[in-house]
Length: 553
Image (tube, rainbow, N blue to C red; front, top):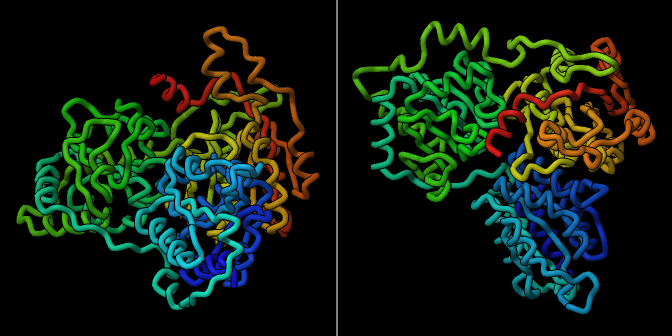
């Protein structure tokens, strides 16, 4: 056995279930060893797509993500996806061949590349420690929730491996990413309990770090009388609760923004409380107490808004401790922010679909709100919606509902367009029980178009919706009102439906609501080909969330 084979087999034994990548000479043997160890390998058409697929897979499956790439250009092609994963603290392992000879045309400083985007660089430096290093990379990815670049020098890969492999090493990891959580400081818990007890209008905002703590947070909120909201990445977490405000921040409904601004206590649970979630801090009113609960100390105290208290600890564990404290209080549960009137308003106004609007559709273009609402009505509720970045992104994010936090995949920490289709593929592989829906702008769709072949090859019954305004719409609406020329960010029409058919997809072009009958027909079956919906959307003005975001520019 050579080192490359030992590394692949060790990771398979440790619990890796699925890997994504593009295979070249530098990662050929390690990839085949993963497959021989029982790992499903999903071949992408571009390393950037592979990295994002692995990221989305890890987010939606609860398993560590793995991406395998060639040395040099294989890694550089993947860097945007890796930056997204690193910024999102996705548990991900990048297996990359490495040309260490500076005379090689494949040579780049791969360690520096990883460091530059916030990933953790590691290297298999010799044959004797190869498996130990690979398992350490797995540990760092899982326990520290980091994106790890495991460099595999070509000469070391080819060296004989004389050690042994213990397949039982994977038993503890096979069920997911459960990691022992740190105990929260008793003094911090006592202070947070005091703040909750004194609050008359508490609001919980849950982020990605709270996605596994719905039950604990809901029970605590019931005792404290708190309203419930999420950041965009945790959309759907509180679905079904009458106190669910949906998403906080730029995507917030007018009602959600109003009620969050009225809070006297805002607690971010596994949530950065960044400029998007707080609208550059404008959702936090003067005098409102702000608390963050996060796994580690820096994350608990660092925020885009001033924090009155940071609690380092596991979200579910902290919530359980606070529930026990409040339950022992003889005064009992608090009404808090919950009243019959608030409940009535959330029921009537708590979703964007309940907010009236004037339909802008005309001249062969459909209003993106009308498009999204129509798709929401047609598509099965058992869906998983993946969103690309761009001017359009708020419409599918907010007008298309999801069952729970497992129905929404949002790779937006780096704000790159072009990740949406690959995101949808990774999410679909993770959750084959749900209909995958990719929502893309025309710019992002054309950037990621190579992966249309991957969708067809994998046989995914995916619905790909392209919101086509024939432009990089965010730039149009940011610079256009100031009189700047827009020729560099606008484009002639492209027949995206024809492009999709050329890749083997079914396709419909939508210019008005009546055209959605084509989607309805596809849904009737057999769904043996994925469907691309080429929607020519109105483009006269920026989306509401973009207008809000630009206030901070």
